[in-house]
Length: 471
Ligand code: CS2
Image (cartoon, rainbow, N blue to C red; front, side):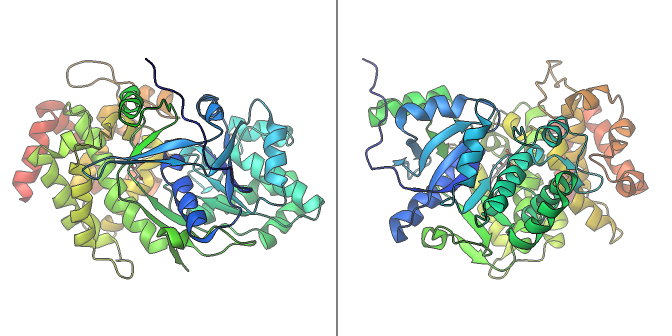
């Protein structure tokens, strides 16, 4: 007999937030923190979630009135039904409904998990990519936006016109200075549309930065089936994640926020040090393991670090190449932090696919690997482990694995990457490699040598040779 569908039991909270990007990470992270904050301190902080692309989350959650299950994996496996999301909208179907939600005076925070590519950044300037097809569309059709940026500016414009207080814009994506970056692209868009609106946004709208951390593999059919078997109900919107979570938030909100500190979030004046620590120590080694692990034939991160050479590669990179570039945030011991990271990576219950992490490398490499490499080059040294990771990415985006099988490369720049025939061609992509770095002889040589070793000896042998040489 098939299990009954999950149904909402607790009454839906009154809405206080809109969230753009209702994917697994949001459901495992933002919504869980908000659920806990409301349980602890009350408040009308229910969430209207908005998908900018697909109807999947809406179709999965609407029959459940927005409720879904958070599954904590590992030895402390636990499940709980989350009720913080009250509705899921699909923007392409009804942009007006999204704008109505975002202009509701009761909505005081609009948060985002739209992935790095969702910000339409021009990587060479750090500002808005005005040539991005969604931006071109939205500037010509401001009332029916496609992009998150277009929706933010349209909603803020309506709030200004109706003399409604603005909301706080809270980026929750893995980008350095994600608050300032979001502010920059929103203001660029607003200036192109209505300079007076841009002036108002600049003066009235806070864009606090955040550091977010919870390893959340994509939900599989097996996860849904396991939940149906163990909990006795069908919930296609369930999310699976590790127990660990960390949210560091700049406390700069124009009209209140949920009591996230009651849920364990850290409210600080500046997130910068935490962001750098997490992007370089966690996401830098995550991407390293993703590309080299996939090429070596490992399906998940835990499978990859189960090989002593790959675990040792991480430890050497942290010790010699990453930690020296990261000023420790107050209260953090980076050696302890990285030891804990390796414990998180090793958890076999967290089946985080190398292929999933390998996605969108053109949007991830700069803040995860290249910044660290550039900072180290400035001291006269070359980060050979990180350059091996860059070479691994280059081999990966070549689209063929070591068994000669095709690799399903997912990246906004997939066509350009496929057309790049050599290391030099890839280094010439200014959207990824800053010209100063791409021209640096020590960097070019280290990447080219690593690429040649991967091609000649294979990934496992190359990683082994690296760790044996650097013990
Ligand atoms: C991962 C991140 O998919 C990826 O790129 O590196 O989603 C990572 O799991 C999170 O940042 C962990 O907090």
